[in-house]
Amino acid sequence: MELVSPLVFVLSYVYPSQIGNSQSPATFLFLLMWVAHYANRSIVYPLRQPSRKPMHIGVMLSACFFNVVNGYVNGRWLATLYPEQSRSPVLIISGIFMFALGMFGNIYHDEILIKLKKQSKGYSVPFGGQYGLHAT
Image 1 (cartoon, rainbow, N blue to C red):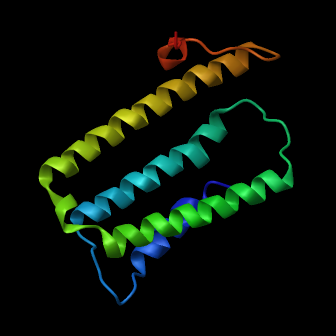
Image 2: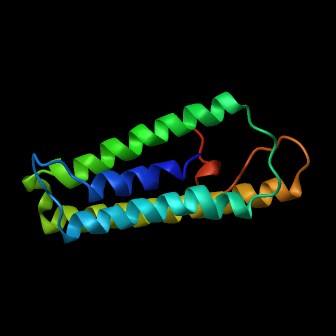
């Protein structure tokens, strides 16, 4: 259901409207980062998980609808509306750094959840990384 997002994103990026075209090496890099994130989220992570319980069709269809809209809006914005003031090398490098940090965090915490699901038979509370932080 999440594989829909990068497919729609790429299509809406590749076929921009005639209004404008903001495609550049930086936007192409952002496209690759989006696809890498969703490849991990929709292919790699599910394949690494132990067996999952069945999902209601309504949940799957709602998620597909959200991911179609999400992929289209973001791909279209990046291809046609990406503002000139956001093209600063400092902002681009900062964005890449933030993406890498977030991607590492997702993968690290996915690993904690995968190990927990393999070790427990029922409900368990994850601990480690950001799971150990509590608001007081």
